[in-house]
Image 1 (cartoon, rainbow, N blue to C red):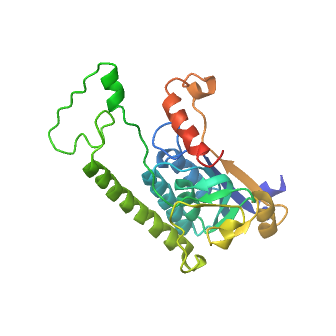
Image 2 (cartoon, one colour; image 1 turned 180 degrees about the vertical axis):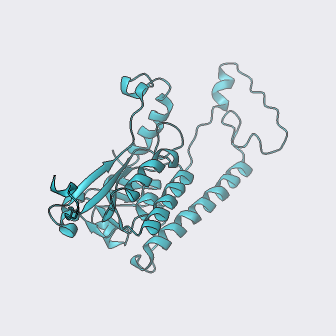
Image 3 (cartoon, rainbow, N blue to C red; image 1 turned 120 degrees about the vertical axis):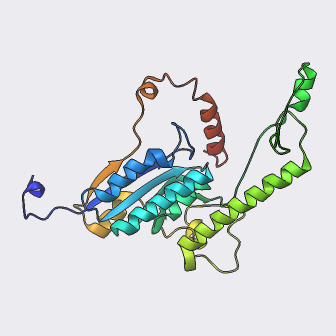
Length: 264
């Protein structure tokens, strides 16, 4: 109760934002709309000594990654609050984009980090629908409206167009990492091939600053009496009852595939 009395010094406060899951627009994923109120509260409430980002994400939408990262930087600079990322299982692809928004990045000995690249995946069904007697009919105004239609044969020009888009997004990702990590990155080494690193390997290539966990690291910096306020997404009423399982099935399959890419 002493910390509530006037003129009594309060223990240092670290606000913690948990960001776990696939990065995607919509009700299930990590996205700017869902995280905005959590980040706003974390940076503004209680005059925190630091904001800690606990990240466990295999990536997802580059746009949502960029929006979330930009919001973190804006709030950190506006409130002048140090921001430290702690990686759990994985901060890969868009997950690493989020980690780079912090001033420092800490990993576990088994954390997977990196995957600085862009990927698109899909299926081609044109032969399957032919075998079951289905005829595909597509009518467009504009030559590119049926771009990468999975029910039509793949076209070289569509693949070239997709790769041009990927190269542009990849360039933005590289620029973000270079801007945030700066001189910490080794010269002459290509870290942007989509490769991943485990644990202390990330320190060796400049993608992380240390091996450490949230509570011990914050106690080391702010003392044993440091307090933690944790902010995380709330589960909706239907989700708590399990009633969104059917509608969420496609998203769950996609997310499962993302985690499996890193052996998780």
